[in-house]
Image (cartoon, rainbow, N blue to C red):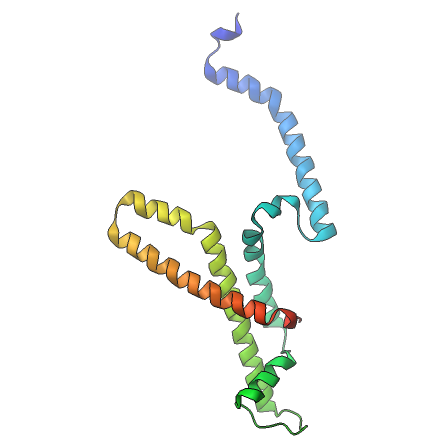
Length: 174
């Protein structure tokens, strides 16, 4: 029997039976390599093509976990609060318990905004093009307007969160 008489499906099945073990082994070896790279340097080669998506994927949960587990706040926040006049002038006096609680709440609020900013960035990297395509294909003008409003809000929240991240980057310790 001639190979040309096989149907397309049979050819694909035969081809896949030949290729699949090699592909699976190659894929497993690649995943092992990426696992070692993550352990060694904190990221793998596969994440470099879209590092924004990679970071915005895990940073929000890490920041939220830090917010929930830590009662510390950066000293710069206290200095900034004092310079704004929201607090009494210290004159080398320790902060009162009420001032510390207020600073702790403010720090947790800042961390929440940073996490939300990264979540919105993740949506902008990953989901927004799919939603736009669906909205345009459907031809529904209300859906397109909702999408544009959502995108505008997410961009604003993302920008605000990333500005706070840049401002407080050196204070992100637990």
